[in-house]
Length: 223
Image (cartoon, rainbow, N blue to C red; front, side, top):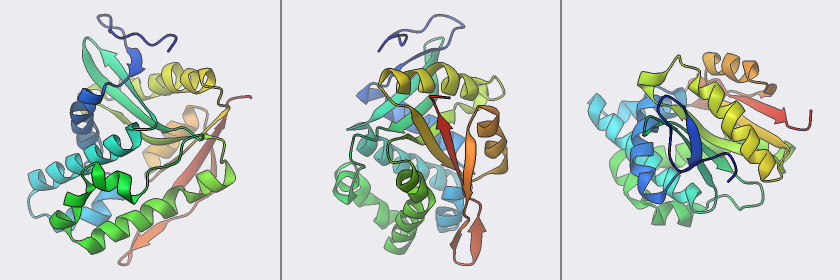
C-alpha cells in the first residue's frame, strides 16, 4: 500500500496494515483507550466489582472484535519508534459485515459466560442501533469501526494525523470517496468536526433508564 512502510523511522509516525500476530497488542492499546468510554461502561461496567477484571474483559471483547472484522477488512496502525501508537479499524463497503458466527469463532462464545447473555444481547442491539444510519444513508462509504491512540501519546495530534495522513489517503487509494463513523462523547464530537467530518444525526441510545449520546458523522472525500 503506497506510502505505508513496514518499518517506522525514529520520531516519525509511519502507517501500515496490522499483522495478524499484532492484534493482541492492538487490543491492549484499544482497551486502555476505551476503558471509560460510555458505549462500554453503561452496558458492562457494573458487572465487575474490580477495575482490573473489567479492563481484562474489555480487552478480550475488543480482541474478538478485531479478529472478526480484520478477517475481511482493514486494520491500520501508526508506528512510532517501533511501537504501535494508533489504530484504525475500517469497514470496506464492498465487504459484508461480520455476522454472529464470525464473532463466535473469533472467541465470542466466551463472552456470555463472563457478563451474562442479557448484557451481550443488549450490547449487540445497541451496536446495531448506533451505526445503522451510517450504513443506510451512506452504503458506499467506508465505516470507521474504531479509532484509538495509545494513552501516553495523547495530546500529540496522533489521532488527527491518523485521519489525515493514513485513513483518508488509504480510502482514496482503494477507490473510496466517503467515510462515516459514530461517537458517544462531546470531546470526540469536537475532534471529528475539527478534522473535516460533518455531523448528520444525533440519536441517543438507552439501556435500563440510562441514556448515552450518539452522534453520526460523514466526510465526502470528493469535496
